[in-house]
Image (cartoon, rainbow, N blue to C red; front, top):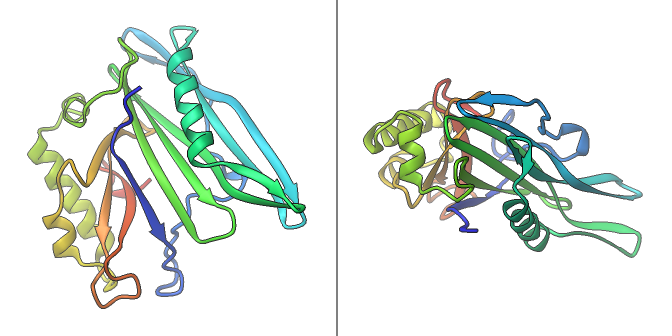
Length: 234
């Protein structure tokens, strides 16, 4: 399985400005999984829990969930096994000395035409850190798709995708001095963004926003995922 571009690594800004929700959720109850079957052109697509791991310690319960893609009633076994092995290797969760360490994981997914997007969220248990990975698959072949192929299915040209990403950055960064908007927009390319299908079936993009040099996190980048139909963080 070819792994698509990974955009990750964001530190919490809650100490800088109130109301900024950096986390995508840090408990099993906040999992965004869905088991609703959906008709998509010629395919019936469903993504549900392949399995999940729950560990407990004095601080609480922690759960990692792993996705299982089902197309036309058949499990995509090779794809699912490869993806789950990667998640377990890259984001392990284990218990040591009565405490849980590592990452919790959960996922979202969306479909449009012959594309299914699986968005993996991994939250570090003991620190204000998360990472996100985007995987886009062709439903006809169950093969990973190139970014430009996904953009075309979303009904956009490359320039339109880049322009809408810039609009999303402008909306998000408005009034936040911690981000360097000009540098963020100047850096937009397929090296820094990944298109995908949101859970609502809309065009989405995951992109890296650059912190201002004089900010607390100067030199780093913050990952954000946007619904390009609403310009909201997703």
